[in-house]
Length: 204
Image (cartoon, rainbow, N blue to C red; front, side, top):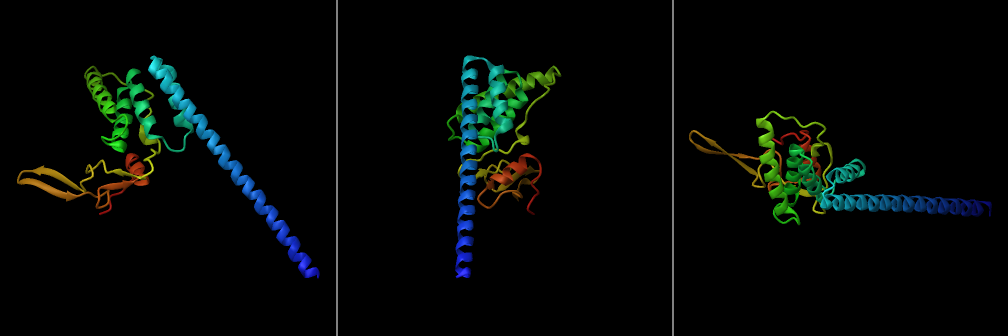
């Protein structure tokens, strides 16, 4: 009898512990969702100020999201790049807009606009270099993990997805297999972020 009572007590305690853990996990998920919702509101607020021409205030909003998000949403790479152009941070603008184009290709919602703003930023950056102006305090995307979207993969920026790199030589073009991507010309999201930080080692 005591044996069965002991088993019953043990089962009761275990059930209570599992129930408490479930509540803890549920609370954690709720908190994460609330944080994500709050960050999305900050992002929307940044877009609002950018559209009004208040680029300094928009920059504060975008930087707050960058400092608090786990992985950077692809749309933020576009917004931050575009807003950086208006602030005269052309190198920063090129960097972030280029990330958006790499992630979304020609099918992204802002792809055409991103290409347009990046070309403008490149032109202004060339002018800056010609008069030896230096930008300070730039926030470059290599410091952040970029969210590659639900597919979890990105076209390799080294070979442009061809898995082959073509180099012109004295005796004609030379072909070399890309040392970073798979045979389909893709990088996983983790590999892509490591490549941005210069941490991805060649496979061959």
